[in-house]
Amino acid sequence: MAQVVRAETLDRAAVEAIFERHDTVIDRVRHTALDAFAKVHETLDQRQRKMLAEIIESGPFGRGYGPFR
Image 1 (cartoon, rainbow, N blue to C red):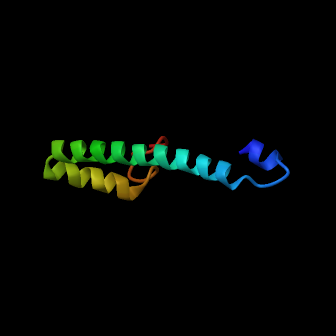
Image 2: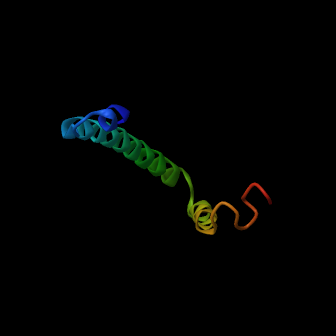
């Protein structure tokens, strides 16, 4: 991106290539996360899923699960 900014004219193709690389990485992360969530969901029983959902809803500092419990 620095090279694009440094250039006299905007190289749209270069910017598109950067975005395409980002899209590829984001897509890979999305699929990996979905696979991981599916495994966690399958592994937990109903009670455990409820507890995990409550932890997620309360955020990082709620209900004593954060770093300052």
